[in-house]
Length: 604
Image 1 (cartoon, rainbow, N blue to C red):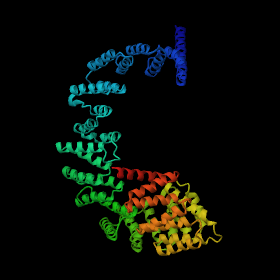
Image 2: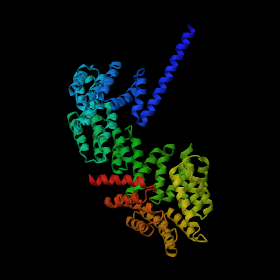
Image 3: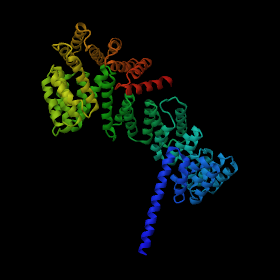
Image 4: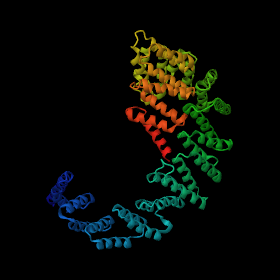
């Protein structure tokens, strides 16, 4: 008996080994396209194993070599093994159609529909099988019968929407997704994840977007208490970047649902991330007007200040009145919070504005020194405050005191981004002072920084020094340029321009010439003198088109024309030129994004 079992086990293992070997040979020939050689091995394996991955290959080989009738016979055999797998029956019907036997195909399809158990899983499986065989009308018939029998227990909205999409019945498809919210409002996130697959939100005037808005408005009028319809409409406006319309709807919904500002916080933060500062500010201001008793009051106050900060520092679109109003709002917030750890980010924002935009250097220094006195100030709050104070000291020309603070931060956060930033700023101090070799030694390390932004800045300054240091034997031009950079940092624009211009005047062919023009252009941008900035950048594109700053100039010109001059066509010209002529530029991704956005706006 023992030997019989051993012999049986041995034979079983040999059979498995032979079967595995046969399948490997079959797969080898199949993948090479030698179906005739693969067929006998597949037939042999199939006698013992009817799994789908074997059968599918066998059916293809059989049809190709022995014809469709042999394929039909094989499919029937597979159905005998798996009578409950409707996919094989649908496949058989499709094969009958291909042989011209529509009567047999229709009989199979009708039998499947009539005998399909009216349970949600069976209905969905059969509809999916028909869709897989490109039979959307039959899938629709299955779903309609299913909806009639299941009623509201399982409304099949997703399945209907998919079939309507197959049939290009957009309005019916969108209606299914919207009506799903009637069945379950918590499905809103699911719907918003699905809709972008079928609707191009890049063009707010497209037929699909207009259709969605119309159907949503109709549903809101018909069922005003279904808040998810309005939520979906707000989401739609956000997708099409119509933030003012989103604000109006969010405000109305917030009042109707008594959400105490929650809807406006959500909408405002999205607008802020999309740089729609006006609408973001309106949303946060609305919440602030609800008063300190609102659970979102302090959050809205912070975001309101952050919106003003970003609008001033990034877009540079502001006037003196707006600047004064922003500073006043910051000061009021600091006064309310008091000097504790919570006030640090707000104080840093105010100090930055005072340092670089309102030129209230002394006030910024006093504020930062007061923050450093906060009991329990430590970690990154302490480091960021020291960094901001060091920046102020550079502007006050106390560069070595600034260097000490940068070194303290670098030492404390040696392996973090803020430490690398401090190291870079310290290298800049030595660059300003004309100690180019020491600055280079620090920049060499920073070029390997994990922070891409710092690494790029370090590389840019390092290349500036390397490319221009040896062009004059006594480094006069380079020292003059570095000193002008420091004057620019200190907002001493006229003195800086005088030094830059002397380089252009006495050394017009020096390698620093394009750098001088770019520095002047960026300074004019800080001063909001856009025409002068354009003039300097245009000189780079004409006189120094072969130099490395050509892509910088094209990008800056595009942004100025887009944001500050309102000339979208001109902006697109510069972005397109950058993409075509400088494909390896770091600015290409941003230029392409801006170009596409402008293109959508101009064609809508």
